[in-house]
Length: 279
Image 1 (tube, one colour):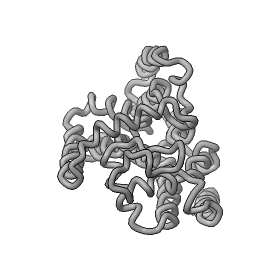
Image 2 (cartoon, rainbow, N blue to C red):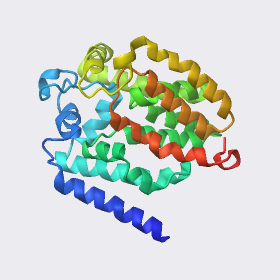
Image 3 (tube, one colour):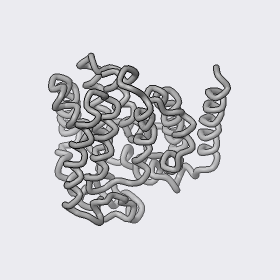
Image 4 (cartoon, rainbow, N blue to C red):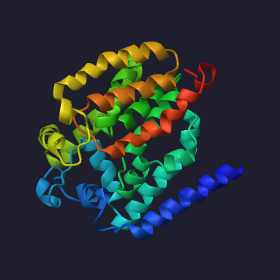
């Protein structure tokens, strides 16, 4: 192991231990306030189960993942989220040509790990799976499944990838149908309506950092800019995905600054040539 990798691993372990010791497992982070609760309660879309100004606005497949994370005490779930985040950065950021330390020390990643947001890491893993497994429909399909765990970050790249690899969309479609059907059988709830109602609060939330909050529908005019950039980088899958994620963030009506860290983890693509990037 090189000296730099040893430093990166030491930094990662220090971050996990520091977060476990310093962050109150019963408050002060989004996992304890929202996600752990969503995994425990019968109706995760009911605002009454959360502290003031908190709500749950994720699809039902997120709920079932959270039910697993909520089986142990909140502190255990927190430790798992911290460990998964730093491990993904350590092992996957170099595949984009990005030093792991650069991501671990970026303010958006540090804020994300402080608030224990669990789903950005799934988007980053999904994007990486798409890149490394582009020739495999099943690997790309698995990547698409992970992207839709965080719609405000992953929906636009998922749409971009799905339109190019239509057969790969069979896996996420199957996941959506199975989880929706299973949830309905178990709860007699069709999750789409309460989810849509919860989404209505998101654009006005205090944590909404999106440009949509200032530009509204004018944000969609970033799409021509994105299409022009895609034309410039076409043939380099890593750069294509970076552009698509960035344009998606510019056009989405809500997201938190925490959600920017996958872009930081992918930024090394601009230092790699086409031969290295592989499509």
